Length: 376
Ligand SMILES: *Cc1c(COP(=O)(O)O)cnc(C)c1O
Image (cartoon, rainbow, N blue to C red):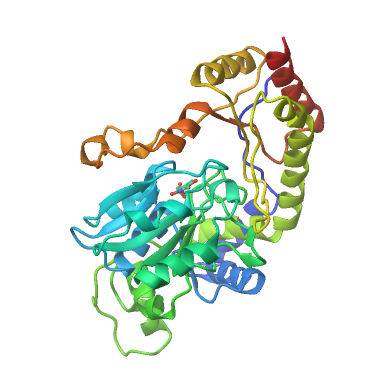
């Protein structure tokens, strides 16, 4: 066996739509396929206003500009996340106050948020880790009481829900990723969702290099000019064409991923029952979009041995997220609090292969290899 960690899935229509985009004669951003994608998000998830971006990182940078992050503002962010969740705000001068994960799953611990809020706190960035929702009612209540913006880093959370509300539709702003390691892909790609309507107009301007070009093309202004800061955050329509082929097949992709996820869960449950490992925890208020299947080992040493054993057996499993508060870049700036659960997941969590083309036989083989590791 030779099982890779990830394999991008192609639905078959990508090249066709790209061809169409190329020969339609307009391949810069905000074209036919960009609009098709925006319509899809409006119809399927009720996102009032969404803007495709070249990455989730870019969508987060737009969010930081929109909420007007300035030098000295504080932003609360989980330490156990991808660097972009924090970097987008650091770029605007924010001080990051890192929050710990929960004991139950890698999402940040909402019950420990209030003690981190000061007069300078401007925003909380939450990550729906593995597409599993953070308790948004609790979070929004805290944020509203303290007049703080909530940004959902929904990079992993496409097609997942909190109490029947799509993730990405609850915070003031949300950012999705279509990087090739996510459920729905376009190579590199992302989406900014604007739920707080005060940001709608300005978001379009920031998206198009600080100009009111989009309003110009709608005939709302008679010339377009430089009106604000911004950058080139919109992707070419070629990227949007690829993405649209994926979105059309979202049910198919999600069903297959959920099948694989559930199979892993069933096959590994005996190990959890016997206390060897912990499996993903999904609260009642959350759905599972099968972005990721992970296991949590008892110790870092055990994790390393298991990854090595899997590798010996031809299986590529990986770990991720070295706690950001301990990163070479941020360590000296962190306030010194220990974040034990962030460190726990950083040390002990393993992600297993999960992609459309992974076969049932391969999943059984992976689960058996893990079971043998613990039982012998
Ligand atoms: C993948 C990911 C990102 C970055 O997405 P890009 O589209 O590569 O910029 C940010 N945050 C989280 C939690 C991610 O998983």
